[in-house]
Image 1 (cartoon, helix red, strand yellow):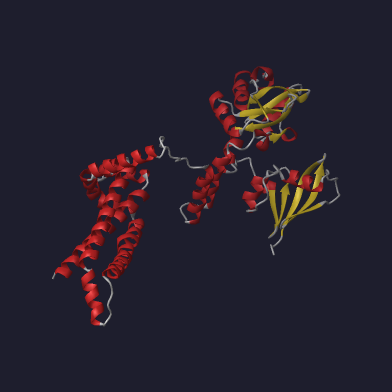
Image 2: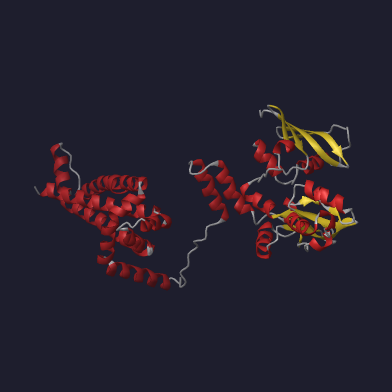
Length: 431
């Protein structure tokens, strides 16, 4: 009867060990956000759960004390009470073993059982639903924290004292999470199906937002739709109306002599007052917002928000106009292309066959990658820039230059004014 009673107590201690091991895993796995959601739902135990989670050192120490005590007591009971029984079992088969060997055998068997049923299995169960198990266990853990408070305090004080004696006087811990770790978690979440490819790309784009300069995303000066203020009123209004833009830069003589930006809405308001024939364009000009090419787009976005500007003019080191950036350009770096009723992606990328596309040479590589699901290096801003870099010269009209890039064949189809207008992309199957 004594043996059965001892085995029963050992079983209880293993279950206690398993309960606290599972509680530790569940509480550690449970995120603060989930605890807050439980509080919002008005769950009765959520307040206690938040209180315990707020002091991780204390509840982890409490659980460790409980697990250590359970393991120590089960080993003590088994070693002192069951050794004689194991010796007698071996005697029945004519084997004589020392008491020390019997204790070692019992300890190994008990360690195996405790490891499986008191650690591994309970922790795996807790990981399956940490929220549910935390709510189930929190009251017991909280009561244990109160009971073991003196022991935990003594252990903490002793630990600090020993560290001071060893010369470790400052207790610091590095809890910073690096950007690469967050990116790894994003990729892992996508692999596990927590969010779609588009959501993954958006999250990763946020981290790139402070690495990109305005120069990398600007509309270059050769592509800026700007109007000469010396044109006739009729010509100016025709260009404003047919431009499909809400804001248009105005210059005198050349684009470097920029006078200001006109909002189409201001033109319409003035036209209603005095008629189109009597509009004085110069009075509608708004002062341009200038920024250097080197400004990072996260800083530019913040400045444009603060100053209520929708368009920024990028200047080079000599004060000349390099290009322009709009709020839409900045947002597209996070959410991808934003098309309105005047945009037509089919004009930029035309499908010729299943593996061939006729692409605008000035189209950003980022847009080509998204639309065609390619992985062209982001070392170049546009497809034209990539081709010129590989050729090491400016293609001539009707020359039909070809660049091989990984599994892509890039054939220059049209060149106008030293600018690559159209490129035929052929996607070959990778070997």
